[in-house]
Structures are given as structure tokens and as C-alpha cells.
Image 1 (tube, one colour):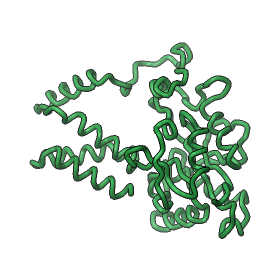
Image 2 (cartoon, one colour):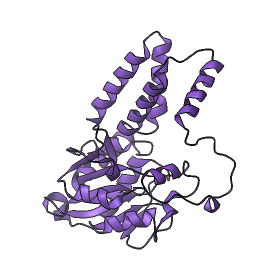
Image 3 (cartoon, rainbow, N blue to C red):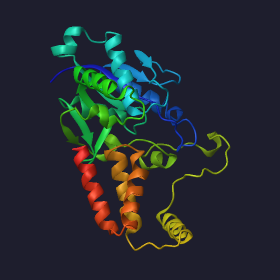
Image 4 (tube, rainbow, N blue to C red):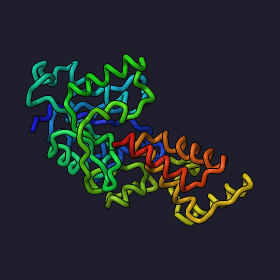
Length: 292
């Protein structure tokens, strides 16, 4: 098994669903970001992709271009930094035991478990139990990622707006792991679900109630019925679950922005007379083909 030359930690999200800077949330004596950097540092030199404050333990800090350019641009910025700052030698990049990089998101619930899972494989993307790739949990040869980034730049001119899959689909191998390994933190409720302390309400900045927040299933069903009535239609039993499952698989298998787009396409198909179940099944199959 090849060695790990560097660990690229992607910390480029806006924390819009958390209500404050989630990476600054403290779990014991460390923030979420510090926990991930600590876990990554045990596996290799840490390249952090961020525009925020850099914690101890980071060898190189860079930002994607443009800022908020998305996961593909962020990972590529990390790859460029590994090469540019000579964290591995030219020989290692081509054919040597120190030519792999690990990729981690900065908001993992258990970054040590994720790092351990990645160091235990030769190459690949971690997946959930259903086989959905978790594209920001990867181990790959540095040379392969460098080549793929160059190809995308030649084809597209820029990497902003592209998904992690666009860059990492060249990585061979998919490895199913338990939920705690790939679970990330998007909302305060995710902290509680992962057994981590949620932020005290007094520590969150005062704000109007957010337009987007976690809902109980009964609240979501009530809103779905209300929204359907507003546009003069109704929902059949199971419609909400089917659409939510489709949105989840599109977000995980393609990219998060693909979730509303994919469900909209399903709606167009239904409007043209195709049963929802058939439209969802066809779109799920297409997601599986792109994710495999």
C-alpha cells in the first residue's frame, strides 16, 4: 500500500444551515475544524483549503479560486498546493510510495474514524451502506488528480461550479463504511444525532427565524399539503417520501445543487403524464450510473 503524502482538508462551506460558523463550534477543547486537522495530521501533512483562520497543525493553507467556487475547485486548489509546495518529490508523484493524498471535509462528526478508514484502503471513495459515494472522503494518487484537474481546466476553462465527482470519478474503488465514518455536520441537530454537544442558544448570533430549518416529518407533510393546495393540486400518499429520497440521492450521488434540479425534472415528467414512481425510478437509475 502506498504512503500518504498529504491530507487535503476542504473547509469551504458557508455554514448557512448551522446558524453560525460551524467549524468554530467547540467539542470539548477543540473546534470541529481543529478536530479534523488533528486527525488529518496523524496521517500526513495537512493542506487546508479555506479563507478563514488557520489552526495549528496545518502545513499549507490555500483558498479555491474563485472563493466559494465549489468542491471541485477546492480540491484542485489543494492538489495544486501539494505539487507546488513540493510536499512530495517529482519521483514520488510519478511512481513512489509517497504519492497518495487523502481528502477530508472539515465538518466530520468523527474525523479520526474517517481518516482511519481512508488510510486502510489502497485507493477509492468511501460510500454509505447503500453504495452512495461520499465524494469528499477519498484516497487517490496525486498524479491522477493532477492530470484530471488539468483536463478539466482544458475542457472547461475553470473549475468553479463543478462537483467533486467531476474531479474524483477517476479514482478507482468504492468502499462502504458505517454511518459514523462519513457523517458530517450541517445543522445543530446533526451534532445531537452524532452524540456531540450542540451549541448553547446563547452562543448563537441573534437573528430572525431562518427560512430554512429542520422540520419534523409531520410539519413537512403539512407544508407539502399546503404548497400543493396553493398551486391547485394534491399529493398522493408516498409522494413526499419519494421526492425526498430522490433529492437525497441526487445530492449525494451528483452534487447538492442537483437535488432541487432533479426533483424539478421529475415534476416536469409528472406534468407531462408520467407517473411519479416511474420518473423517480428512471432518475435514480441515472444517478446510480453516474455514481458508479
